[in-house]
Structure formats: structure tokens, C-alpha cells
Amino acid sequence: MRAVLTTAAGGPEVLSIGEVDDPRPGAGEVLVDVVATAVNRADTLQRMGVYPPPPGASDVIGLECSGRIAELGEGVEGWNVGDEVCALLAGGGYAERVAVPVGQVMPVPAGLSLVEAAALPEVATTVWSNVFMTAHLTKGERFLVHGGAGGIGTMAIQLASHLGAEVFTTAGSREKLDFCLSLGATRAISYRDEDFVEVLEGAGGADVILDNMGAKYLPRNVSALATGGRLVIIGMQGGAKGELDINALLRKRASVTATSLRARPLAEKAAICCGVVENVWPLVASGAVRPIVEATMPLEDVARAHAAMEAGGHAGKFVLTL
Ligand SMILES: NC(=O)c1ccc[n+]([C@@H]2O[C@H](COP(=O)([O-])OP(=O)(O)OC[C@H]3O[C@@H](n4cnc5c(N)ncnc54)[C@H](OP(=O)(O)O)[C@@H]3O)[C@@H](O)[C@H]2O)c1
Image (cartoon, rainbow, N blue to C red; front, side, top):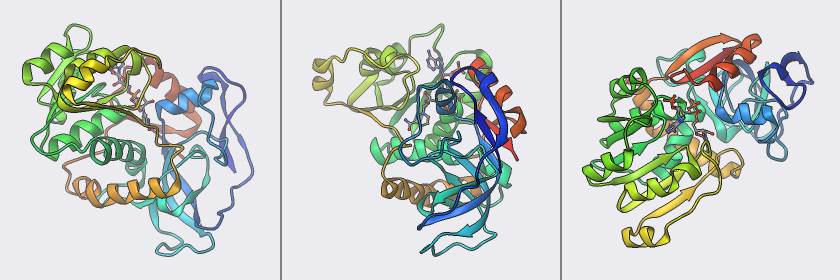
């Protein structure tokens, strides 16, 4: 089958299209004929050689896809060949076919095309699991998400605002700040010209923060938390090692969690996907939450999509079609 090959660790130019063996669905897996996949920041790290796939996962990059079920592995129930689905993957999405554990297969939300649905699995599962299952954001609480115009940020703003939180976010340009406001943020803060700590302290502190910056923002995120606040770190765009003021945390009775989705046990990922189908898909079907797509391009343009993501001018996701 056709797939994206990574010939060496490096820049987008190391990505090319080539032939690899077809995957076979194991017990408890389904084989999906991929219609579309999408680019995640982790894909760029895997391409650079700093984020290898977990044991047992495909070497082919790609953490999500949409498509049609082509074959059912042993013991799979509840799905049929031909069903239109989208899926969360541990790898293998940049290819014509992928084998997926059945717990990570989700129906396409009503009203969406298969191509649109490819933009959802990774952002929906990441935001649902971290903001709602781990940090327990509730109606009326103040929520800060950094990088509101990115793939994760655009989903986090929409979900949190529709579920009744007061949403604060950061972004790097006027255009992106305005876009975040249009998605439901109540206050969009320029990370270039403003201090998010001042803004949040002035508002009473953040009950939940979803952070993509890691070390660079750790002390300031702790300062921005309200009493009982929960900081969830999912990215290290600003480095991995920082200093934590335990005294500040202790006085606020606050918590810091860091999570990664990809290497979690199958049962945990299945529970997250169930939560997404139950809680997020109805909001997508009603139009309250929508996939935000910067550009859709053929798989052959994968290097261009990676370069564009790294250049950082985008809002939302890059979708690749097969
Ligand atoms: N742990 C997990 O399971 C998991 C899962 C998925 C994603 N992630 C992580 O989540 C992060 C976002 O992923 P993504 O797919 O949404 O990537 P993305 O679309 O490329 O978004 C990156 C975001 O970072 C923002 N940013 C850059 N510098 C910033 C700064 N100084 N302060 C605040 N924001 C800044 C950008 O804002 P501007 O565009 O406005 O400059 C952009 O919105 C990545 O770090 C990724 O690795 C983790």
C-alpha cells in the first residue's frame, strides 16, 4: 500500500511517498481504508526522531484518520465492513490502510463528511480527557488554554465555552486573538504584548489551565491558578525542565498534572473515546462545535503541511486526503 515514508530524521524534506506492507487486523482490531488523516505537532517531532512510536505501533507517522472499515479482526462486534468511522491511532495514519484497536474507533459525527471528521479524533480525545476527565472543568469555572488558535486550542475553546466555562486563551497575533474570540473565548490575551498572569489574577485566577508550553510557563501558570486550581500540561514547546514553587502550590491547594495520550493502555484510550462519542459528538452534530481546518491537501503534500505547521501561521488543523 501507499504510505508516507520517513527516510531519515530531519526536516519536512525527509518525508516521501512509498510502498509498505499492508497491515493486518489483529484480534480486537479493525482494518480501516483511510480516506483522510491529519497532522499533529507530535508528527513533526516523530519526523525529527525525538518522539519514537510506542512499542508495537506502526513506524508510519499519523495519530488519527477517517475512512471505511475494510475488515474485522477476530472477536470484533458492533461494527460492519463498510461503516464510516474516524479513529484515534498510536501511529500509521499517513497510509492507505491502518489497523486500529476497536476501542479507538468512533462513528463519524452526524452531518460531517469523512474528510472533516479526520480533523477531530486527536483534538477531541486530548481535550476531553485532560480538561474534563482529569481536571474536571465544570460550568461557571474559569479556564485558560494556551495557544487558542492551534488544533488543540480551537477545540478546547469551543468545548469549554459550550459547556459553560469562562474561557481565557493566549495567541500570538491580532488575527488569531480575534479568531479565538469568534470561537467562544471571553478574553483572548496576546502572549507577545500582555501578561496572562495579570489578566487571570485580575479575574480571580484560573480554575483549570491547559498548557502546551511546559517549562517556560510553569511558574507563571502556577501564579495564574485560583485556589483549588488544576494545571494540566500536555506540551513542552517551551522546554521540559522547569522550577515548581511548591509553597505557592500548597497555599493554593492546587495541582499540576502532565499527560500523554499516545502510550496509554488500550482500556484508557477506549474509555476516553467513549467519553468523546457521548459528550463531544452531540455538540459537533448540533453545529455548536466544529472541526477547524486551516487547509486540506493531498497526502502527497505532506511535507508542505509539516512545513506550514512548523511555520506557525495556521489556525486549527491540516488535513491530508488519500
Ligand atoms: N500530551 C498529549 O497527549 C498531547 C496530545 C495532542 C497535542 N499535544 C500538544 O499540544 C500542543 C498543541 O498541539 P497542536 O496540535 O494544537 O499544535 P499547533 O496547532 O501547532 O498549535 C501550537 C500552538 O502553540 C501556540 N504557541 C506558540 N508559542 C506560544 C507561546 N509563547 N505562548 C502560548 N502559546 C504559544 C501557537 O500559538 P500562535 O499560533 O498564536 O502563535 C499555537 O496555537 C503541542 O505542544 C502538542 O505536542 C499533546
